[in-house]
Image (cartoon, rainbow, N blue to C red; front, top):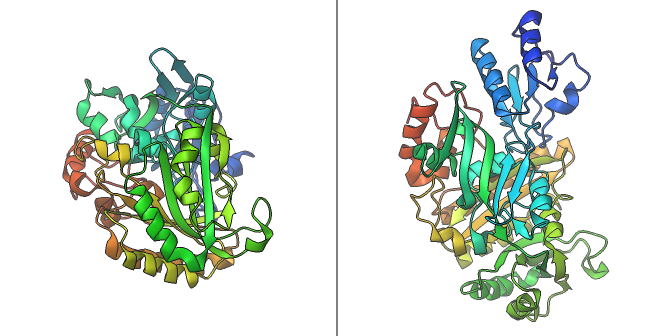
Length: 468
């Protein structure tokens, strides 16, 4: 592009849209444009023609009808965290949900209503006032919409499952601009598809969740050993999680120890194997449960201890702030064999950047209690997920970071049997989407053809109704 966005609508038409919305409609000529068109991943640099921030479902309907009338490509932005940048477009309209922030809580029924533009941290802070939580992700400035519609993994998943497993109903604006309600009893096909099918079917302006009881204080687990002990630590960890209590959600990972506090000086910058996680039962019970891991070795680093749930839910914010460059790959595995571990250790040892790491998340637990066909999220039997969360700052490192991540992912995919989790997948295309939804693909295509036959909502891990 030439760096300019040529307005696809006239000034009079734009004035009509502005008069219909409470908040300003931003164009490249307006001072707030840079801030409002920016997204979380600095690898994404696109210039939409319009950013329309909506405050309720009726305004979203107005924006969609306007976009259809003027043949504008629509990107829907909740928290702006989409790795491939689905929340923006070149020359199109961004429908921002940043004005939909209502949160309502019924402590008796533990039902929580949230606007489609809410961020995870906003929901966590409100629900914790009542000793409750909606199971979700771990970066507090993530939008609830994108995370939920893709599945929703986090620190409560072993005990309580995915975010979508707690969705009771949703308010959806369709591609035609209709407002519909989706639940187990109303538009059940749409409700099924929303639980893991992404933003293919409409704009979700409101969610109703069943919250869970979660105490203010939890046990944080963070242990690390020198990398030369990786094989022994993996064996110990895999044996431990085979029958670990569901209160513990954990992962094992290869990383370079950050310099500075709270890490011991002797380990600063050293390659290591770590085990981290959260215990969401009684803290004393948690200490007893994880003793076999803490006493193994012993670890060179042990930063385990009592923390608040809110601390744990925002602990990754510093590692994944706005404005860094991100490229991530993932895959779901039925098992984590020694050959995969050896491959991971070799790849990590040859990584071109200190910031690179390889994570293996332990799944199962409550996730696997739900049948694979009960929701659009099909990968209920996976026991592990590899995750390559590349994050860096210097654009000069782009090629090395992306190439290493892709190469390592291709190698690890030899052990993938359960597809991938699309919320942390940087690549796009029909092959990626099919892998993400596995055996639920054809049913998703049918729902897409019913609710969005022209593929109006295509800036997402897309289900093309014309291709099937």
